[in-house]
Amino acid sequence: MATLVTFHAHPDDECINCGGVMRKAADEGHRVVLVVATRGELGEVDDGFLAPGEDLTSRRVAETHAAAEILGVSRVEFLGYTDSGMMGEPTNDTPGTFWTASVEEAAERLAKILVEESADVLTTYDDNGGYGHPDHIQVHRVGKRAAELAGTSRVYQATANRDDVREHMSAAAADAGADGADFGPQEEWEIGKPLDELTARVDVSAYVVAKRAAMRAHASQISEESFFLSMPDPVFAQAFGTEWFIRDGEGPGITETDIMAGL
Image 1 (tube, one colour):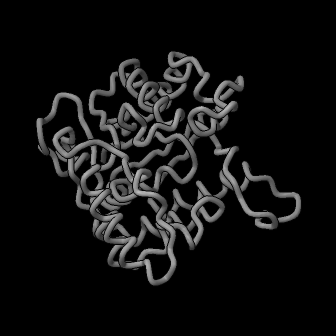
Image 2 (tube, helix red, strand yellow):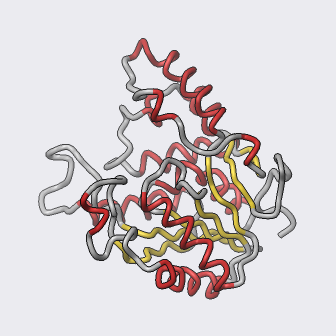
């Protein structure tokens, strides 16, 4: 049994790029540890969504634990920073946010968990955090430094195949158009990295049911009307049945199909 530590910015992020490899690793007998930098305090919900007296932060923590159980996670930890908001928002500069945190200090917090767990594999994000969110970019920076401090040599940057995103989103928008599903403007689909920068392609088609169920567990942020949950099951399986990574020292091109291989 090996240990996979997967590091994310906010509750619900873990489902999208890594939900499949998390469930896959757990099913294969590995230990899976989820670390989240913030509790997603700046998420938005409609009036009346929360129960009387319930705050969003507590709700998002509870949703994280529910999703983690679906994905086979053995341990959930929060690093203790607050949500920075989208790039350019005034909240980026609020003391205590992840974006304002010292990379070294945050890396030491994560490295402590890596050492405690004798982590064999760490997942972070690509250098643009997938789509430019400050907390996602910080996950890349902090994760890279934490791996250095802890001596965790096997690090994968979770990302998306930019070419596939364009293709699948176009197909999904066309298929769901009759139902009125909103997939947003195409410029918002420009996420991830080009195929020639990616080094690992993991087939997680056997785990898309668990992956989608984990998304549903984050009901405060991923509604039934979102493109994640409104698209037909076959389209979802096509769009989210593969997870993509960049591993330093590998490539060019796809050289791996299992981030836990050989462990």
